[in-house]
Length: 172
Ligand SMILES: Nc1ncnc2c1ncn2[C@@H]1O[C@H](COP(=O)(O)OP(=O)(O)O)[C@@H](O)[C@H]1O
Ligand SMILES: O=C(O)C1=C[C@@H](OP(=O)(O)O)[C@@H](O)[C@H](O)C1
Ligand SMILES: [Mg+2]
Image (tube, rainbow, N blue to C red; front, side, top):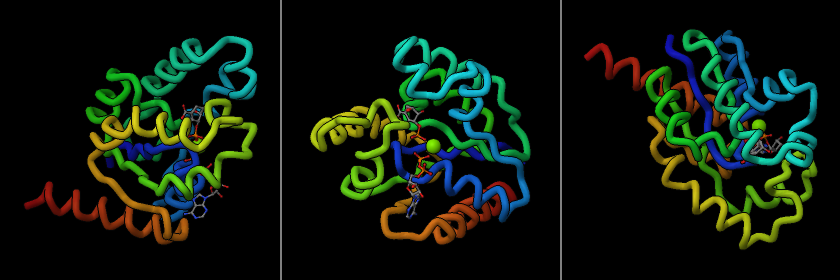
């Protein structure tokens, strides 16, 4: 099976749902943020604070493009879609699933989280603006699932439905 990429804004549940999906499908899960932290030996906030966003984005693209592309679930950071080369690489190498989520729900989840430097201390209008800048990129995904009022397990089942539909499409 081709790699499954979960994309979406900060707080949409990519990391959480990826782990559950991995258990359900019995596939390994790799989180791009975790890979970056391992490679750099530093936390995401520290990388942003000491080296800046442009550096983080460079490492993020490198990590993404070194990922396996078969029988794996890859959970991405919310900003991975900004770069054309990343979106293109994911499309070419896997199935891209956009976890879409209501901005009110997202804001509640991320506003207090000091692990997300691009959300920390931002006002709600600033968060909305950031989302709007990225929305069209998220929408390039193969599938879009609205997760706002679903439990993580319900999201997993929806993803499995998408994968089955995709498989049926290929066989018909
Ligand atoms: N479907 C959901 N329902 C309720 N809470 C969720 C759901 N998905 C994620 N969460 C919670 O939201 C927070 C952010 O989830 P996370 O997986 O880190 O998001 P992302 O990786 O997309 O930034 C976590 O506290 C997680 O437990
Ligand atoms: O949206 C973004 O630009 C970011 C999202 C984060 O990942 P999550 O989407 O898992 O929070 C992480 O990659 C970094 O803080 C930047
Ligand atoms: Mg995450």
